[in-house]
Image (cartoon, rainbow, N blue to C red):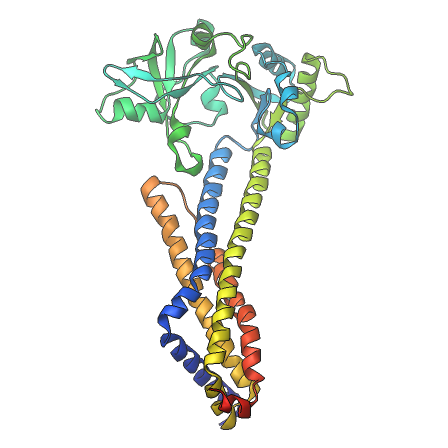
Length: 432
């Protein structure tokens, strides 16, 4: 038998002894790994939810088109850059004239649209009524005929409104999948041409927008109604009217011409807006230019902070679990002093004693890690089953949880194992 085979057989025998010891103290072992189980469960469970939401959010943002540029009074990017609230409040409201100027002067601009009721501010929210049924309060947007094209939306049924309908302020509307599902899909009614009431005004349904990706799997992305901005003005007011604390929420969407880069169009839009607002070279922009990349960059910062907080909190739980393992292993060494003396007396070396107690600690925490992975995965899948919230279970979260648990076993078990290996066999045999 080779030396390597002997070492492997000895290691196997030592591992079997360590596992047998753990089986003989089931209750104590279970209580010892509780902290490890909690720590690993939090890592796997929260990672599955965060990663699932991250993938869903990216799909939702990318559905708007990677080259679309949004101009707004202010938004999350302004707050993330450290701008003061009072400074943002003093910014001028965007106007239809801003959209028309971009469309007229922008040589690289392919398509524009104005969205009244979108962006930072108190967005109009109204229920939609059809006969005896009604929806929950929905976001109402006033747009041009370009909304469907510039938003890369797909019509499920019917059509969008035309340029003539926008110019004449016709009371027509295109509904999202949310109100369509609530009012027409269940009873099997064709919504095209049906009259619905939004607030106190009656509108004719021209079309239905298909389902869109929504962050977190929530239905909010489909809960909206669009109407000509001219009809929107009649019911909800002109963009010059202050609405709520933030003013009338308005957003201008800009799409570059084919063959033109987004950055080139963004520079041109910025220059036009600065001229429109009379800004000199030494003054910063009093508006925000937002792209999908900018939104994702802010989300990356937020998600990184969440993951860091998660690791810190989980590390505390794992540290508590490690202290418990160290305490139990120290007690175990004391209880088994005579056993250690006997093993040394019949030829066991320090290394073998050290490995035996280390294996006990690692097996103990690894079992906690496996239980934590199972429980964390179960939490994520249960949330997905109950609420539809998207989850993702990346392999690296399992590896991270198991790696953390094994590391806790090695670190916390090292001192008791070293103490056991250094015992004098004569003194150990005399121990009562």
